[in-house]
Amino acid sequence: MSIPSYAQSNFQTLLRAAGDGNLALMECLDAVTGSPRYVICAVGRDGGDFVFTPFGHLADGDPYDAYLPPDPGDPGGFMHPGTPGEAS
Image (tube, helix red, strand yellow):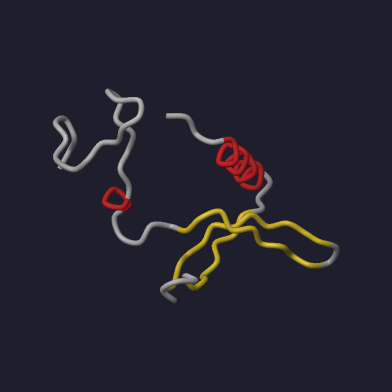
């Protein structure tokens, strides 16, 4: 499975911002649920103003419960709980 170019480009921007010390962690509200989210943002400048570009939020709780990793045996698949060889 290939990572799309927009995601690769955004990741490179995030790496540059981190390397330059231009990252911020902001408390925001989820636009749908209204729940608090802790959002990783790149910090830029527009004249005398700061500009915060959100890249994603930190996982609430155990991030291993929030995501399914790629399946090394299936290029188009993902590991699911209970998959042989996966830690419980």
